[in-house]
Length: 168
Image 1 (cartoon, rainbow, N blue to C red):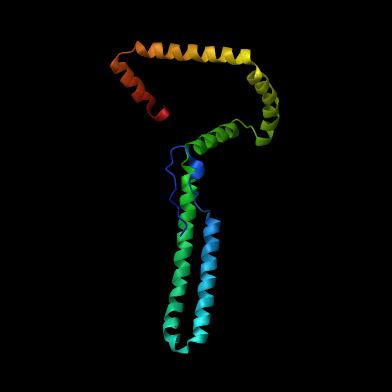
Image 2 (cartoon, rainbow, N blue to C red):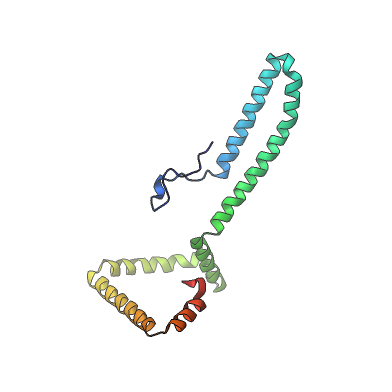
């Protein structure tokens, strides 16, 4: 009904993929479907009196439809929340915000700091000489790290990677 499968494989072209519908949208579809069902039911009740016994049985199961739809909508909302909560970027931001909170820094205190850092960052990022120096420093650090790893034996490398675990 909603065609939740992406049209294109997710290989970096996320713009072509379908987004999952929001829980509110699904709720509106369920309500519209139920209202359509009730209107159709009442129309058939009035126009076909000989069908009333069958329609009466169907009306008893309409409350089951509402219950199942409500449970499905609740589970879908929970699934979206869990998917959002398990995102590594969101977890990192939550840890960052928690550390700021532990230090006693309020969100309103961050605005002046960010406003002070933005012009400095722009000034340095626009300077081609600074960019060249930064690239040289980054290359030197990367070379030092790889040279240090080259000196380790296979067992030492294994132990290093094992101790780092999922932090890589």
